[in-house]
Image (cartoon, rainbow, N blue to C red; front, side):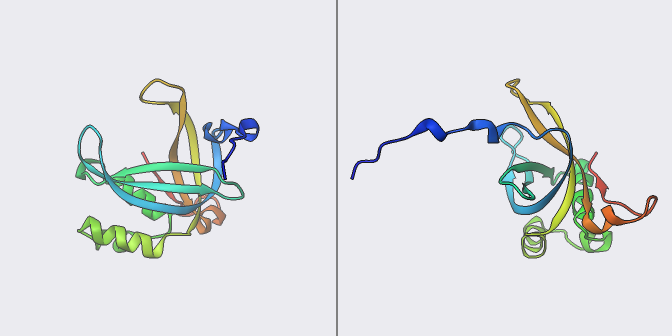
Length: 147
């Protein structure tokens, strides 16, 4: 049977960046990739916005000079420093993240920034907070600021 394409319901608005702000998300996926230009390894996080089908992506490098971003991401998702620093192998860390943090809820703060290719805007995650940290009284330990 031949299929006829109906484009009347096609809406690309779902690809527009989110407005700057704070969003409840779920860790939807984490994969290790290599940088297109540098070849350096990083983790690509896919975060699903609660109550919608929207996604936010965040990359955390595995390079020593900027690994603080990964550590802050993991702290923001509820891991403690000792747990994080017990890993020296990226594969083992990724396996533990996928076993323990997939489906984990958190709050992220995002901003809109220009895309590197100059074609429009994209989102950048600037902070991750566990649900517990977000509910803590003012001045208590909070989630990880990523920069």
